Length: 357
Image 1 (cartoon, one colour):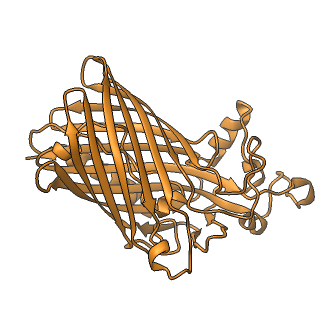
Image 2 (spheres, rainbow, N blue to C red):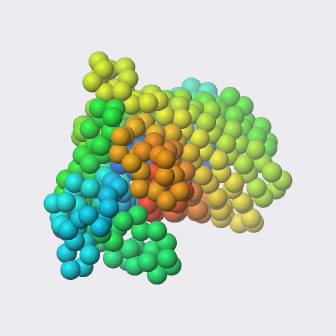
Image 3 (tube, helix red, strand yellow):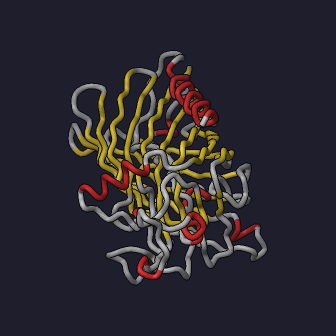
C-alpha cells in the first residue's frame, strides 16, 4: 500500500504542477481523457481534442489522474460450482473465471506546442497502478441496494487483482496481482482546417510508441497509428456541439508477421457542452469504440445474450464539468458503460491544464 500512497501523492503533485505558470488562455473542446479499459487501453485512443487546438499558440502542460474500478467475469452456472459459506468461489476457481477484476490509479502527463501554422503537436506519458478492490464492498453493496445487476460480482472474492483477456486474435493481455506498469508513449498532432466564429474543423493524427509493458494492459508492443476528423459547432450563445470520428490501426496488423490480428478500431465521440455565464462548462458526452478483439467465450449480459466477450462496442457515457480561468483549466468527469459493459465499470478523472507563454 506504501507504493499506492506514493503514487497518489505523485498524482496530486502532477495535477497541481500546471497551475504554476504564466498567463494565457487554453483551448476548449469536449471532455478530454483516454478510454481506460483493459482491452481498449492497450491501443491508442483519441482522447477528445479540441477542433480549435491547432490554432493555439505557446506551450501547454497537461496532467491527469484516473481512478478505475473494473470487473468482468466469464459466464458460468453457480449451481454447478463449489461455493464457500459466503456464497463465493474459491480464489483459484475465481481466477479461471475472471476476465478482469481490479482497481487502478493512472497518472498521465503531457506537453504540446505549435509546429508551423495551425498545427499543434504533443506527447503523453502514462503510469498504471493495479491493486485489489478497496471499494469492492461498496460497489457491490450499491448495486444490490438499488437492485442493479452485479455481473456476478457477488460470487467472486473481493479485493483481487486479475486480468486475463481470452481472445481469438492472438493478443496477450494479462496481469496477475498488484503492480505498477509504464504505458506506451503517445505522439500526436492536431491540424486546423477551418476555424470560424461559430464552427471549427480539424484533422488529428497519432502514433503510439511501444514503450509500455508488452502483454499487459499497459502496451501491446507495437506501433499503433490513427487519424481523426474533429468538428464543433456553436448552437446559440450557450451550447456547443462536438462531433469526432477516427480510426486506429493496431500495430500488430503491420508489424507482428501474423502472430496477432486485432481489428482496426472505429472511434466516435459526440458531446454537448453547456456554457452558462461565468467560467464553468458542463458536458454530456458519449464515445462509441468498436472492439479490436473477439472471443469464443460467451458474454455474461442479460440484454445481449447472443454476443461473445469483447464483441460489442464500448458505449460509454461521460458526465463532467470544466472550470476555465485565464491560462489554466480544471476538469473532472465520471464515465461508465452501462449498456454493453465493454467500457469502464466506473471511472473518475481529474485533470489540470496550463498554458505557458
